[in-house]
Length: 110
Image (cartoon, rainbow, N blue to C red; front, side):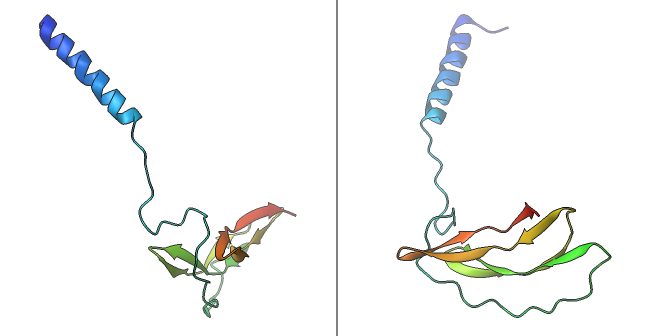
């Protein structure tokens, strides 16, 4: 059974924790790419060996350069099931003022 003092301390601790959490600001780790401009242009695409599709109805989604940890990192291509009525538009980098910005790949309706 709790005492009135213990109950008050528990409520105070809960309130203090909530107030502290309300003041928290989450900042991405250094080098995290959140869509903002990147100063370094992406390298030319790597040559990939495209094997045989795992079955009918698959399309090849080509690899691309991603920004990870303050550098470009190659993400290998892969086979993906075709989405009926859709086409794939791969990611691309484009110039944005003094830097570069990445537009992610996406499926779009034909």
